[in-house]
Each structure stands twice: as C-alpha cells, then as structure tokens.
Image (cartoon, rainbow, N blue to C red):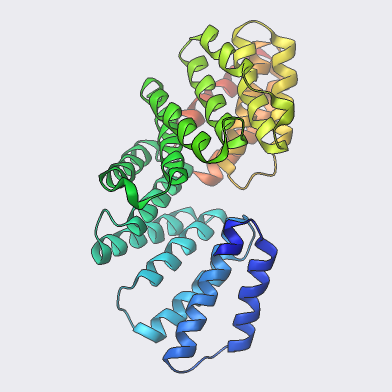
Length: 338
C-alpha cells in the first residue's frame, strides 16, 4: 500500500506477483489462504491504481481465495476485492456486471461495518463513480452525496484528499445532471482541500479550478470563467491536466466568438485525452470538439468527433446521459448543415 501511495506501481505490482508465485496456485490452510487473498488484493489494487489491465483476473483470484478461507462470510477484505472487481469489469466493458459488483461491495461493507465507516464511505464513493461512468447521472449524484454525508459525520476519519475527491466528483455528477449551479460550492471545497495538501498551484488544485471555470462557462458567467482560466499557468501542468484545461477553455473561447482559438484548443484537448481509461471523459472531449467546430461553422469537420463521442458513450453507458443526448443532437445538426 505504501508503494502505491508513493506512485511506485511497478514495484507494488512486482511485489504482489512475487508473493502470489511463492504461495503457488493452490495454497492450503488458513495462513497461506489469508496471504494469497491479501496478495491478490494488493495486485488488483496496484493494477487498478495505475489503470493497467488485469484487475478483473486478480480480483477474481482474490475472491476465490477469500471464499476458501471464509466461505460465504462477509469480510472487509472480500468487499474491498469485490469493489476492485467491479471497477475492473467496468473498464473491461462489462458495465452492468461491474455496477452489480460495486453495489454488492457497498451493501456488504454497510452491513458489516456500518454506513459511516471509512471503508463503506469508500465503497459508496466508488459506486458513485461507476454510476457516473455508466450514464446514471441522477443516481450518481445521490450516491456521491450519500458518501459525502457519511464522511462529514466523522470528518476526522478521512484525510483532506478524500474530502477533495468527494467534493470534486459530486460536483462533476451535478454538472452531468445539469445542476451546474449546485456544483460550484463543491468545486470551491475541492480546490481548498487539494491546496491544503498539495499546494495552491498543484495540478489537483488547478484542475478543480478549471472545472469550476467550465461550470461558470456553462452558466453563462463568462467574465468570471475567463478570470479563473486566466489564473492558471497551463504550460506548467502535466500533459493530461493541460489537455483537460485546453478542452475546457475551448468552450469559453467558442462562446466568446473566438472560434479559431477554440478549435485549436479543442483539438489539442481531444488529442491529449485520447488515451484516458474513462470512455466517458474521452467522449466529453470529442463532443466538445464537435460542438466547437459546429459553432465555428465547420459542420462537416464536426461529424467525425461527434460520431466518435457517441460511440464511446454507447460503449460506456447503460443509460443515455444529458451529455450523450447533446452530442446526438449536435451530430444531427452537423449532418443537416453539411
């Protein structure tokens, strides 16, 4: 766990795999089975933390060992492993199965540890992420709010980064559900917590700020959005953070009538985000590029990114989100205007 916290994913993965090899494919007895369960949990966690393939297989192995160790008994380790299985399945494209595992993991943790236990808060938080990725935006808002409410009842149990992430994801879900005004204070809280730990100029803090600027743009508060975007030194950001910033700023520039700059920014953003694990986030950047091209009166050029966005949304979502519906409407407009 310490290796993961420090970003040493290669070492964490190698260490977990070495433990699994040492234990063999069929460990017998409580001690070896317990160690095999923990090793599989560690491997799935490390792979998942670095968005690498193999999470599903490692988690399934962990659940097999846990079942041999404890039968059908509900345990904290089993719910943790099940949550990793759910995340892995969603990333592998098995969205319904992944959501089912996340729902069971959160229910098991709640039954065993209580609704306000830090592990349950984490399980519910992960379920919210699965629902948001799957297009269930209203359900995601409710789930994220539940996770935050539980955490706020025992604030000393979680660190500031956990609160930053909870505020940020709840804000993202509210924007996705078209409750953008309600998202603004959560973006402010997210930036405050990130700044407390990482510093005011850290990518995490600036990411929360640019997300708030995008929300202000959607609300038509363009001067405020421009000031926030202008307070961010984008060239100092890591590649993915910079691409996210460019994609968000593109919408503001488009609404300001600066279409050439908007198109350049949106293209750079979509290109920089094309390898993200989240299909929904990739779809958003492509849909934004399509919308910017459409506003710039380039409907023929808008068709391809909009089609790609809709295809990604369709792969990721069980339910059509408002963002996906907007992309479909923009594509119809673009095809009619070619």
